[in-house]
Figure 1 (tube, helix red, strand yellow):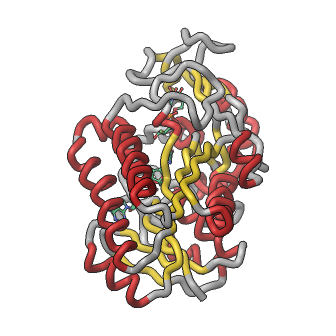
Figure 2 (cartoon, protein in one colour; figure 1 turned 45 degrees about the horizontal axis):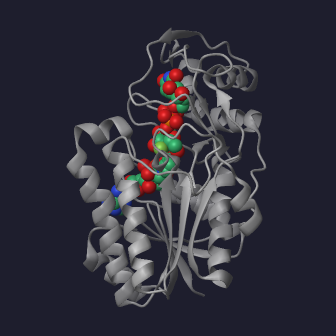
Length: 335
Ligand code: NAD
Ligand code: UFG
């Protein structure tokens, strides 16, 4: 049976996508250099899926390793998650971000071409909408990047569009994720923050676990219902299932397809804190801080195109996102 190659498959979104793929009859091969993940995720994935999963430890920029994988495995398509993703860090070490994110994509495309595998789904981000103030964000909203990380995503989208224009036999899915949170129901896999969490929900979970004294709410003077930033949080399991739908669509529709993966609903920072308190039954102290540089007031998706064309609709609400996130993250801290 042909398999889907998952780059960065031991990471947060990749690992959940591996589970959804097996649940929908696909098999996978994973390549990951463990830069931001741990090998025990592979055991957890095998436990959840009850399958033996082929794993190659290494870097996607290593074309010889990619050739080995394409020679040894029967690969029918690729989902490309591998990359660096921290906005703040990307301003400190931009060249590493360009090298890793863009270099891995080019190496991957070159080897895919050598092996005549021309189906790729790419992890893009709502960050490509930059400071766009008109919400909900649609796939044809203006694009812009405000930091090196975002620029890597915009460049890669451009590279994939140029590739498709030059050879229309490629089948390309570009998925723009909004804010993934939550974890698999088993509590076995989830997001493992490395150092101080940048993102809101992992930070709240560390406050709930008593590791940090309070949540720093960045800004309470935005033009939003309660003054705090509004985002489109999406359960990682819903997001993962979006990849299955995108692959199925590429099977029948070919072409270059771009979809937002979000719920279409925006929640403020205070809404999220409240939902987490309810899910965990723990009081979450918070304090207001200055706005975080680069943040925008409001970002949420128009999910209509993904619903219409691939049948994507998020199933889980904010309560389940918080419950599932906490189930996984509390096990890391509270034994
Ligand atoms: P993650 O860091 O948990 O997963 C990425 C995985 O890729 C890690 O396991 C890491 O070890 C691996 N990796 C990194 N560079 C590699 C390389 N050169 N070769 C091989 N493996 C490599 O991140 P995630 O949250 O799962 O994100 C996956 C993708 O989705 C990324 O491309 C990210 O930019 C994108 N994305 C994430 C978010 C988010 O909020 N998590 C939002 C939008 C887009
Ligand atoms: N926030 C806080 N305190 C924190 C962390 C965040 O108040 O400790 C606020 C932010 O100001 C923002 C909201 O919570 O209003 C969400 O912030 P996150 O850092 O969790 O998420 P972002 O929307 O800033 O960015 C995330 C990813 C990006 C990705 C983007 C869109 O980090 O890589 O979602 O997908 F591009």
